[in-house]
Image (cartoon, rainbow, N blue to C red; front, side, top):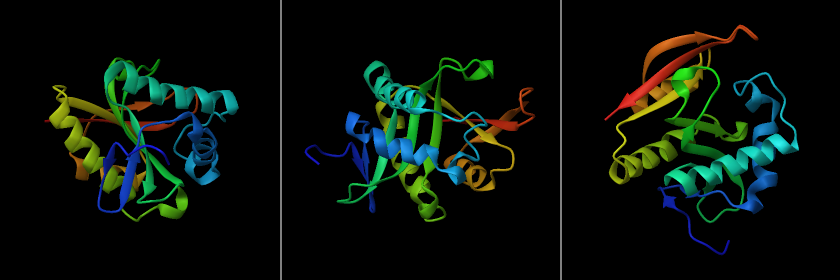
Length: 176
């Protein structure tokens, strides 16, 4: 790689999105196990490209956004973690807010990747930005993500059941 990571932790490098990341991000978010908590709609190549553009655009417009996690010195993206500026049709509470999210490759689950990355990201964000509230939306039965969210300081403020598929989501917030 010809640039430097945005942040580094003991084990990982956290990189801002780049056009060359498209294939790896597509693979990450296309995996069936990973998709289990990313919604029922299947994404095509255009959807994956738009996700990459939203990620890069959040950095350009707001000064924060998702970071792609690689092992130190590695090339492979093992996770997408971070904070991004959110606009959602539903729930309305998640429009024009800073939303936290993490997606980890299944072969890296339960290794502390998201914990280590998000801890570094939140420390940077809290020091660099005056925004004191961030939100997260986690499917009710996604216990590992709930455990991580609680560890990071997120608390449930509402629940939302989507009429389209009956999925129950916990809406969480973190205030500093």
